[in-house]
Length: 474
View 1 (cartoon, rainbow, N blue to C red):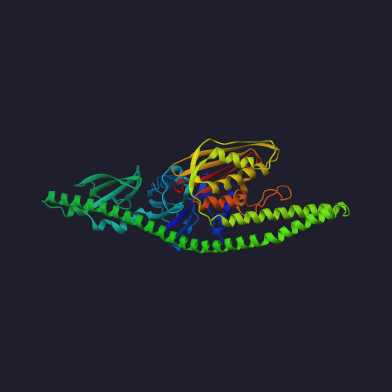
View 2: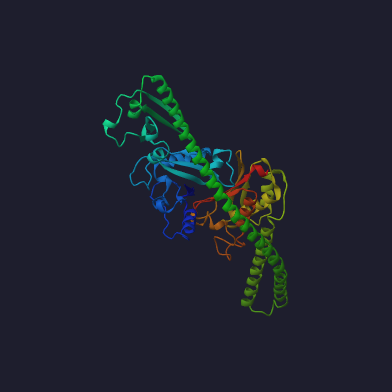
């Protein structure tokens, strides 16, 4: 049994995943290569030692594995693969995999779009069909022979390794059953074997009745076995989730301590910084006629840097307050709030903004902070003195989707994740004034409300930032 994690093919997420895995397993790699747009590597498997070949195996490399894992993700249900050959099976006999998907926050989302957006991975159990049958339904314990096909492909055959002399060529009893199992239809071809013929007597009807009951019992046993595998997969997922919860509790405590420190430090630093700013202003006013031009430039630079530090402290204070306040949901007109935010920006007349006239129910103050930072960034990082900013709105059964797009220079693909971190700017701070906390603050707010933020940009022409705000919080 193991764990398969979902990774999109963008370099930042892939590189981050590989770096994390190689902390404990330096030689970890994803294999084999393929041309799909996403990765589904086997990250953990138990027992690990006899299954070394499977660690890092990307489920997207082969059709049956990949199609079934996509069905599990999209449906939110357990799923069997079609017949495959397991990499750890030296004899290369048919087998299959059993997938159970899991998502962010533990619950299965209601819509297909959201399930695709929030998928974390799947737990899976591999089965070699021959070993499965021999361990549970070995022919020596029954008087029938079984063949199992999946969509015409052979999964198991009692007669595969036998001479024709050991097979009943004219069976007294035969039956074919089609059984639906976790997204697949298996065809069971069942016939009496030589052991049945040898024990056959004149009481033929009784034997046929008993044979039918035995077949039904065998099918029930197989179904119960797969159901047990499903329960074990879910239990494995629960165990993994519990470990993550414990880590989350420790992380939340650390974050709380850091928030308190940021709040106190930012508040206490503002007083001496105000004193420095005032002192520079007094020196500039009193010594305007006697200090050289070079010193005036230095004082202007000191004023600029002090202002930047003050903005940074203000942003730190606002960042530390995000989880302290509880804001109620209220009706908000997206066009009105976007226009108000835009009107307060320091901009040239060349910038325009459009927003839809829709009313949504959402916490107003956090949304205003998100829009203020997004619109400010679109203006501040634009390479010209004019530009168009569009605020768009979409909805689905799970989310408000608020999109802010601009026609600026964009964000390079390799910097999408870094742009969401604290104190990160794409240009030197002497060229673009800012604390580098705008997107980090947005990410913190949105994730506080159990949402997510996505950046779409090729780094050349424009940026689209999508905010997924859960309807359950509205």
